Image 1 (tube, helix red, strand yellow):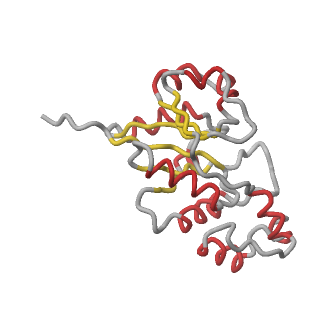
Image 2: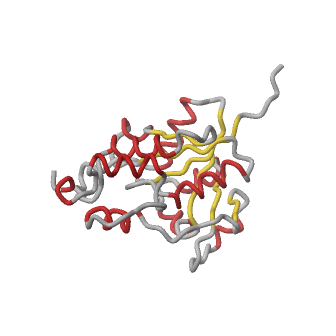
Length: 203
């Protein structure tokens, strides 16, 4: 009889437009300093109803995540939402993942700035009932009353850097250096592909 507990996987959702070292520090902390076995970086697809020029194509952003974490066996890129109806809701993604991976237990990873807005999410009560939420503190944000919920785990020592993907895009569009803000493989791809250059964003 197999009584082994299912592997607990953390889901880190984001547009990763592009992925930067700030994302990776958070993901790696959760994968190595909590009880999570792995962290899956779930790349959010572009909403077809919302044309946003600054958002790179889905496959480009997914590729950047893959090459950024290629040397880390505890991190994984996921395109699970690419094939789901849009707009995608977290509860639907969680349900689909549980159906596809019955041998795994999933938990959400989110910043402290998002926790107070959770009651506005679709079926947030089911999320809180069935899934743990791993929250990393964000400077200047109050966690709200959900911080004491039994399904919420708050981590206040997660190293964080004040880096935004929008700043990186602005630098690339202006031909300014982004060395050290992204990993070396990501830097090389961005430089060779011209992604986020003004001419590419108009395509």
